[in-house]
Length: 182
Image 1 (cartoon, one colour):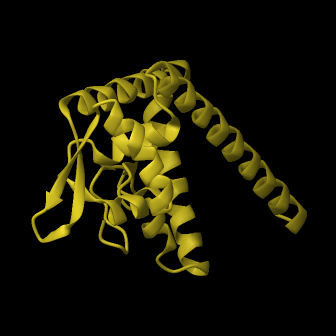
Image 2 (cartoon, rainbow, N blue to C red):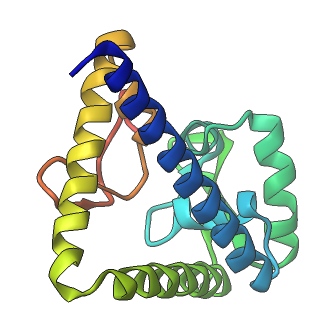
Image 3 (cartoon, rainbow, N blue to C red):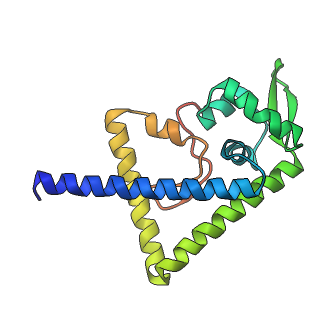
């Protein structure tokens, strides 16, 4: 294939991924607004869902935001009774946050809405193509990881730390750790 053909394919891949990211981001925004949350608040609930209490620094890194932005984000979640703050047993000067029962329910509601959207997308592909598409997207993610590692070693794992994603093995994994050990 000519260099121009590869460039055209690369541009096509970039355009399709951009469209998918935009569409899924818009879907996520609509889902969380229906739950009375912002996207940042929903991401915080998702990051804390089903886990141990987390100190604010590691939580900010996991979310990819500054501590001051996190503090503003947490204020409404505390006010709405979705989070609680506990003293850190290893450091009395520090605090850890965790979801309340209401926070767990809100996070579960957002996740159910996002899952329903994804199920609707898969239903349109037809039963025979679903596994093939998921496998191909997992291969694409593996290729993205390899390309990222070439230019920025450790960046992919850092960016993906704490996120649920399907890895090279096609397995959905909520426990992948990044370079920061979040």
